[in-house]
Length: 326
Ligand code: MTE
Image (cartoon, rainbow, N blue to C red; front, side, top):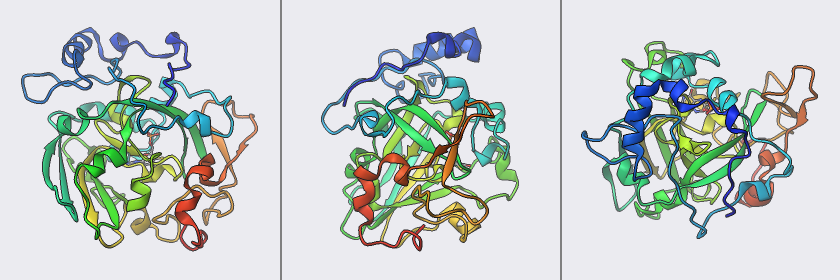
């Protein structure tokens, strides 16, 4: 992996002081000092989104996404674009709702349950999840099923490294993820627009692929709530809805798990959801995409199979009919 300093002018990043106020900045700085994400336990204040995130490089099993991206001239979207144009129905269906309302979500303490077909199961504090892994930056293309896209410098660690710790058994064919259910702090959950909690899943070989990534940061900073803090998945070759936010439960299963969007509209959203320009959504084409930040009159760009990661992941689907398993 080639470690990349974010290719962005500091002036484009909202200063943390402005973002959360001076007091929050100081409190968060204390918490973040010395560890990647702050230590467990009530005595330590949670790190604040937007604060610098201390992370290191681990060359062992990482991938530099930019090396594989088809167009290396792609510039990452700005912090403001990535944090103010979101899909997060727990906070409303509008693109600016998550930035407006997700601040009220308490992301510490945070526990994650691991269950199902694995030798190691139980309840774990977030800090137990994150501490053992060196954090790295991955600049990934992100393609939403709504035919817009961004380029995002995430910070996190490979999902496989996390899952291997639980020693999945040979019966673990899939892995399922659930988002937190907390209607008191997630006002969208008081309305039945989707079946709560939001749920997603991957086939185990997809989950173990080195591009599948667990994210805790953005632009070298602590992940903002609207982007899925404190822990969210990113599967860059799949439509964005697979990339579930605010994960509290991981279950290894033998059967394909139900997933929120494929249950809500099975004809429109499949379990696989691999980015595929030749399979249109029933109500719109997937052949092209609008890069967020481009001016309105800017030409749309072609969508690439597997979002440009075909060389890495197409082998996972050898022999499968991708029109049927969309
Ligand atoms: N996760 C949860 N829990 N709830 C959601 O509504 N939306 C999904 C995905 N993960 C969603 C979610 C969709 S449709 C997209 S496109 C991405 O999150 C958006 O991620 P971003 O806001 O960080 O760009």
